[in-house]
Length: 400
Image (cartoon, rainbow, N blue to C red; front, side, top):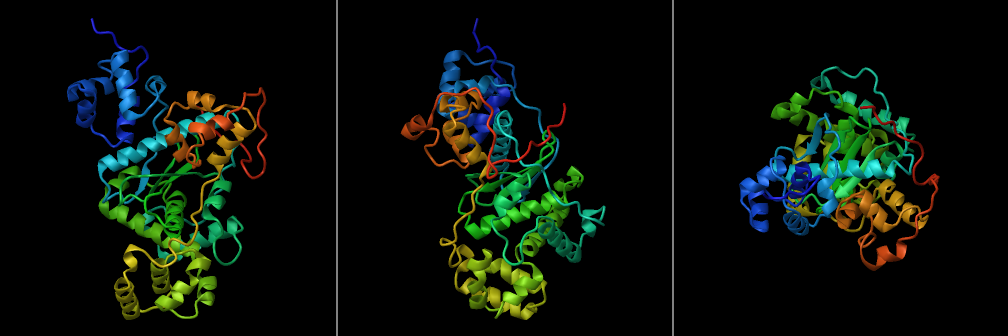
């Protein structure tokens, strides 16, 4: 009789396979079994032998303990995908697994840290039907966020820092899909939102815009019927609204207009480093504010394409990308304070070290190799009291 692995959980195999961008047939070829066997493993109808599980662990670059870790409750809230209509199902599956792993990491860090409480403005007079949201309301919503967060006049400062300070969990990953820029979800477990940004080819200005775009979904569309997301027409409306909100948040009408000396490509480019917004987004903002008419906008886009800025604008490599701080500083503080060692972290969060490094925006090598060995310290029996730069107060977890 074939002996399986005690405690094996098929859903964790599915996660690992999807995270590595494989389908069942590709994994079957890699480990020398039939696709039917992989399907039976994943659906709990059969358990791989210890030897087979070791092979799977090696090929998928996952620790053995990952495959016996209990799966957390699935989230009921929808995911907003930036690039839903163009990204493949496999790309979205690969990215969605990162959300699961991100929640696993938060589960672990919540033992030691209090996180900033959620602090998003409650918008007044919001239309009950998102299709009734017009540009005037989007201007109002963007202004409300800046006012509520006490953002100073002018260019938005570090947007990721502002969002993390207000209780939003942010991560950056290599999505591996050109058309999938970012995604977000309200956690039904923690009652807080998660935003995941793509590291792939994204410039600093593109990343800021993506973050503002996802913030729009969190603020404007959190109560939308999930079935609406399956309608291409409705989803386009929500995407267009998020685009408009993002430009209004990053380029407030009065301050941006006062700073603009000439609505030309060179005039807009002169503002790029200060506002940290792409020239393309500024063109759209000028059109929305009636600074440009249809013909003027068309001429700008023709010249924009003639300069080949579609594939990359000037200063894209000069402006430094913003980095999420909360998760990185939490892991670093656990290590530097001696509360946890690298081995304890990897035992508590059974993922590949490089997956944790990526999700927590740690420097490469922080949990691997010589750097990790130097940082690891004996664990102390104490609870960390986070400093003001790290985390502030505990988010509320919903009782199951």
